[in-house]
Length: 214
Image 1 (cartoon, rainbow, N blue to C red):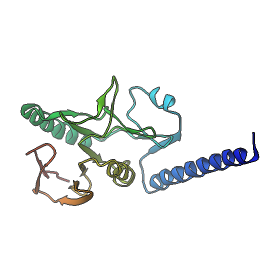
Image 2 (cartoon, rainbow, N blue to C red; image 1 turned 135 degrees about the vertical axis):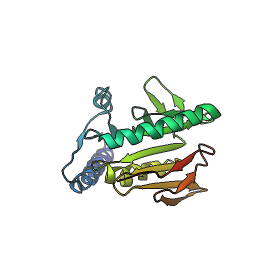
Image 3 (spheres, one colour; image 1 turned 90 degrees about the vertical axis):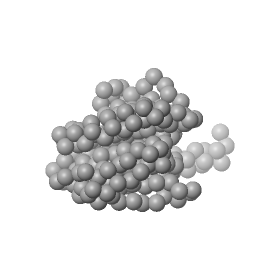
Image 4 (cartoon, rainbow, N blue to C red; image 1 turned 30 degrees about the horizontal axis):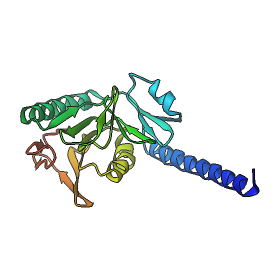
């Protein structure tokens, strides 16, 4: 093996090591912002990630990320929103609304399980046995103490990089709904205060209403 090739291999390994350190630092910084709750992350392979089976988790750049159990308020909010979105979508024959165990493969290094996803009937992605390969048309994340910064910063960044058309964050703590809607190549941010509404352009005509209470 020539000296040039050896040097290139060393440089590549050094770059990968540096990237992993940066990713780990990002996750660590997010974890440090949380109080009295847990954000669990550890370096793992894709095979390790799939061995979790029934555990809700994300896979980000070589790391498995898990949150602590959801609160009752989180689950009640999920149930109400999921059922209304699913019924509306099925009645209008717009596509599929799926829940929080739906694994979305955005690319080889990013595999997330949003709380709710909408995949339109015209979406070019592909359903496999336990996952969807492609970009969903809409995602919903219900923010909790453990997931707030992780969802709003890191997952939002990935969703926007892959051009998810509508990204919905339900903020239980501040009783707000934060919406990022894709307009051409840019995202417009909309914040729904209590009793305000937003009509979705993706689930055509569906109304997101902020009826959250403290």
